[in-house]
Image (cartoon, rainbow, N blue to C red; front, side, top):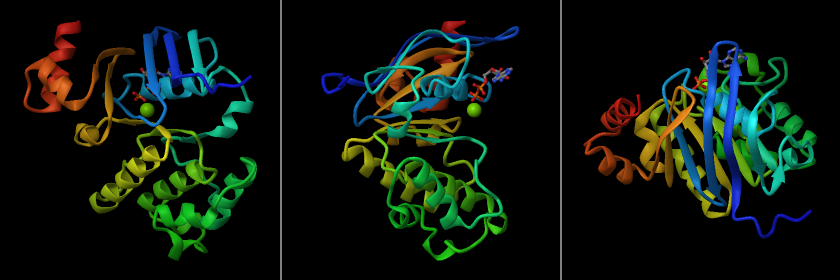
Length: 239
Ligand SMILES: Nc1ncnc2c1ncn2[C@@H]1O[C@H](COP(=O)(O)OP(=O)(O)O)[C@@H](O)[C@H]1O
Ligand SMILES: [Mg+2]
């Protein structure tokens, strides 16, 4: 099946997921066009990771519908065209940086290992064993693993946690360049100051999208001067 005519790279309709007494997703509908950088902003426990894993088809027992690149999820084949960076760096501690990236390239059927290491500025540490890398370096290496196969959709779960401000700016420039090349990016964060680098934001709390729009839209909607305040205002209005 071709997905050439599908406008949305990611299309989630009324997703619901319960873990025991916790309603982790409480009816989320989300549509992200190709080439957009979509920021999923919300505090810890708001459902960001569950939503990202739901988009990937990795969560059992989800109600609702998820379509990824025109393919109804869950579907294993479409995952070859997706990059995913988990919150807990999923790296092989006894392999070198380069070996980790090469491994991910191989399981995805190819990729440019050098370009990925360059993107995260780890070329000079390529021969270092992961166990010897700092937390920030491991985060960068995880990112390199997630994008080495040049995925059409990149799902990044809090990728800039523990990354210093200078590299953070560089990563964002890289994300913007990838989006300009057609990559769709969903990036979660609990830090509001990254929001203006996104084309569109979804504010998530307790498994619900409180509001969606550009940073400017959300500020106007809440009559707020800062996004933190907009979040609080919109959260109050919803409860
Ligand atoms: N596997 C799980 N089992 C039980 N509860 C879970 C599980 N995964 C997530 N939760 C709960 O679902 C809620 C949303 O979690 P999560 O999606 O990880 O939020 P976030 O990524 O925004 O911090 C939290 O209350 C969390 O404790
Ligand atoms: Mg999370």
